[in-house]
Image (spheres, rainbow, N blue to C red):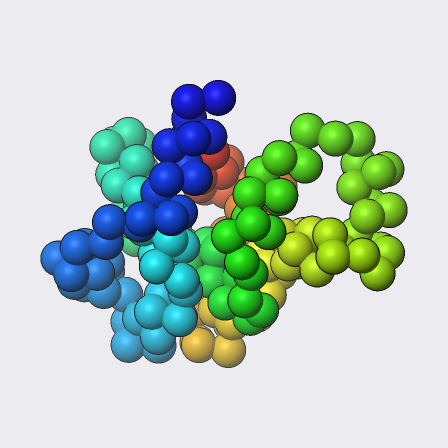
Length: 166
């Protein structure tokens, strides 16, 4: 519970130092930097925190895998920039994660105020993969972004673990 309160506080006050942005952009190509900067400030903060968790974990990876994982971590939620989402909607998404999938699916397919944030949450990984593809990022990064909630690869699992910690 305390974790969720802290998460809410970070969303309200993302505490993003310009040095953090500079650090993130050093890892990204110009096209990837555009995707990063299009994210909301809370998403940028989250992406940096996810990336730093990966760096701290010191996984034994090849240099290419490591670079791909870092870039994917910085951009894994870039698909949320396709549609704007308000803070109350973010809170709703977190709170509703524990309900049965059948009820969640009904809410998402309806026309209530709850359908929109659920659609963003469900589809942002796919949208992010397309954005990364359009930006010319390599296929491994695009796939990692697409699968960050449902990983199919070792790198995807590492990204999901770091995402879940933050």
